Length: 441
Image (tube, rainbow, N blue to C red):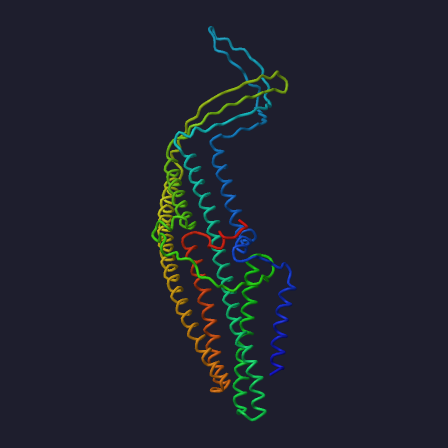
């Protein structure tokens, strides 16, 4: 048995050394600080924010079309013969006026589109809504990362509480083993009772080894989420219950802050604007163009010219492109509308599920609290009976095992209640309460 304990503690020591020696050790002060670290360091969130920034730049690109474009140019022209200038006069006089058959020129031109049909405005408005959707999607990514973080952290809190309960049970068993060994030596009790205690100790040690393995896995996953090695901070055992949330708004009004719902709504608006733009492609294009030119012949003196003109054009044939573009925009609009409805239905279901989960976790915690009280009282009675010699240590360890399970169930129920509380915040589109309570905002 001593060899088993030695191996167990050696394994625990190796696990701790492996964790502490890993690069990028993360230290945090509670769940609130950890959530802020996830917000600052998670690669997924940085990528989502970068995509949102790119979408914002798209607004400036769309608005730039209002201002048209300017250009400078150089040109050269080659004719097959010298050109003649034939002035019209009466009586007709035809005078041969030589002009270079090879000319060159430099100039500048500016074209300004007149958005009388609102085509550019539709593109700008569509891009504005898409940019809003990108930022809201980044906010949804943030909440999704928070959901992963609280699930891992509450899991560590649950494991820590369960470990403490079973460590207390192991300590009690080790004490009983010493007493039982002496009793067996003096012949007061049978050796079979010592075997029962030894078996119970092995069972608890195996359970603790499994819990340690689960803890290492959760810490590694949490460290990967933070993009910095492993998470090694000490976990505090929960002791207080969450504040009641069920009395606050629970209808569609409570869903207005959900980023995924706002993103779906923004995409729907963007597709509406795209449909408007597709329809406006059937209208004529109107633009102004100003040009200045210095034209020079190779052998003749050049001159400066400028021109200002307005142009109205209408495309009467495009191979059916505008028909197809309108059909595509209409289909995208319907797809966006249905996706919004699907997101709304999912949000409602998640809110109802989170509310039911919160209520169930609350009842489970109450039941676990009652069970802990009963187990504590049973263990106290059995301890008194053992002290008075009315029962053996074997009879007492049953009560102590029940107490350890009750403590573990109580800690698990409290951790699950806090996780349900976090999930209810997230279902309403808010960060968990620990985020707001952290001083690192």
